[in-house]
Length: 135
Ligand code: THU
Image (tube, rainbow, N blue to C red; front, side, top):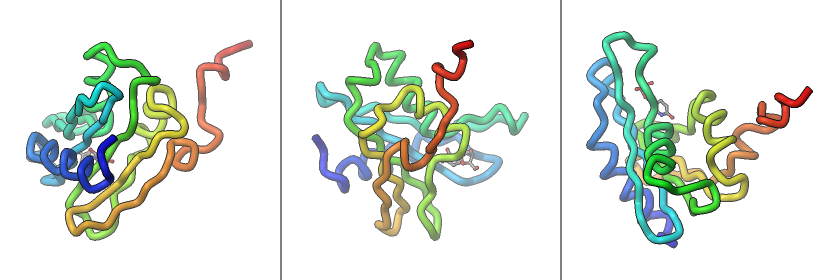
């Protein structure tokens, strides 16, 4: 498994793929899976602003599209050029709560080298889950 700094470097690389002409806020994400593959994601915006999608979601959706499942995932890093650390937004937390393993690390970092390691359980306690659909 990659060291924290190494997976952050992959997310920094992913950040360059961001299409964010409206916010000018580039975000990159990198997911490592058990066979060693690194899957990159970046925020992709639209002139109809709400249609924009975050880096975390492009990365997790791409992971599943490549045939990987929750149990294949080792870690994710997310990087933005912010003074403080940017952690996943509420929508991404909800998506990750279903698609990302409960106990694997979510590394949120900025370009200055600050980072925070957390899990989805810490980021979104009492989340809405598919069990809540049971009647
Ligand atoms: N954004 C992300 O990609 N991930 C986050 O965790 C926070 C926000 C994106 C969405 C939008 O394109 C831009 O950053 C500004 O909100």
